[in-house]
Image 1 (cartoon, one colour):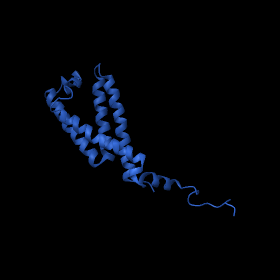
Image 2 (cartoon, helix red, strand yellow):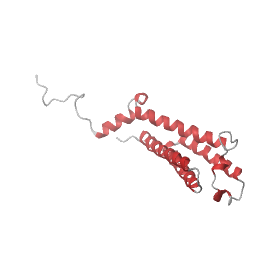
Image 3 (cartoon, helix red, strand yellow):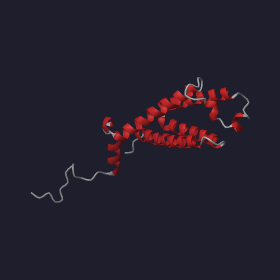
Image 4 (cartoon, one colour):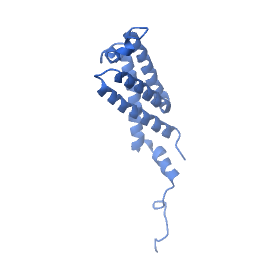
Length: 154
């Protein structure tokens, strides 16, 4: 028998929707894309929460040193109070990522862009601004992946 013109399920071309379905919902434990999503998801839950908690204790770093003087000098409160408020926001953002990463990823990215603007207001922290920009790209990627896994295209 000749195999010309005969397509078996193994050799038949897959429709684009079937490829997407297979990539996002087929056995997630073995799916590299899903594992990458989970790495970002866990990281963007844990790290903002830890940084937010540390705003109350300053064990990792003196967080007030990263506040641009033009902002710090015009606050109606002390720098420490302002940083603790930022810590509460970071903890809330981490919890939002835990519960709704397709939204929380965008919130974390926007928060990081605010930090970047602050860091550009005075010299000496441009390297940290660059790092935070990279983190914001990761947060955007997380939001996109979370949406893809939440709403797989068919």
